[in-house]
Image (cartoon, rainbow, N blue to C red; front, side):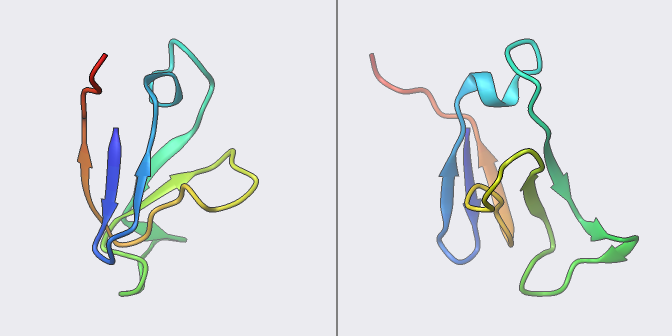
Length: 72
């Protein structure tokens, strides 16, 4: 899966990271924080990888999630 942000940032996730039958990951698409809409530089959507130690895979200003197939 390819997550793309408005500012050009992109993050790739493997099947095992997004399918609960493989791993116990928590990946969320959020539109609010503490019950309030995200700030403009974060939203309108944000991809949050709750179990990551660093925030590199959390994508602010999320525009699209695309399932991609890699060549063999």
